[in-house]
Length: 316
Image 1 (cartoon, helix red, strand yellow):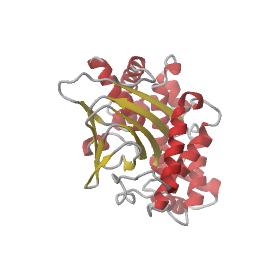
Image 2 (cartoon, rainbow, N blue to C red):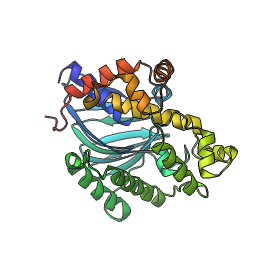
Image 3 (cartoon, rainbow, N blue to C red):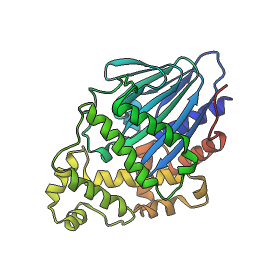
Image 4 (cartoon, one colour):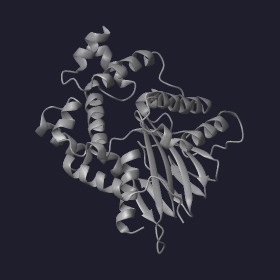
């Protein structure tokens, strides 16, 4: 692959799983491919490459609001991951959990293949930082929950093309979230307690009504017959505010649509309006402040990256 193809590889990985810096091995031609499925808000990826290093620094975290718990299954080659003061070597069939809200580094000394699932933190109800004791730890898959999870991941990735765009994507997203929740539970990490059922209903309501410009803390509280103060307490259990959550989700959906080649002919302002951001100048400022570029520039880069990358392939 040439320089443009390598750049596209990094862009596509960043769009799917949060902003990362990618550095190939010095003096070696880079080869790689990325295949990604968006099952609702869950991201499923099959990433293959020649030797490289992938890192997410504190500065990248500040510039990108992607908050995912990620579960990776090593399928080929060695992988060395560092996060939260630990450094662990993975071999094929090993699992590892890591978190995009804190810096991490993945090093791949040889040709490699990684199956990755990224699940938004809000879907699990696990407060930020609670997973720090179990990130970057090698999880063998010789038995128990980890073996079941690894088998499920392999099956999902084998059927990525068949599952993409299907009517059951939301169900698949829920299954994948439950899978990670099951693994976190085995490792001693528990969901937020008492308010979780109400919070899940509130978040689901928000997601269904993001296209309504009048969606606000007051309207959410009124619909669920709780006080605005109590609503803020609910969101605080996952380090959010109602307004911040609505704004972030709307921007995520617009960003997803901007990267969709099937929507390339739809004006940016119309895409923003579809998701409740009807004030075009305000939306443009908000998008730039969040992602560091204009919506138009983001779309051009995303569509160019998508056109350069194959959906499947094994590095030679």
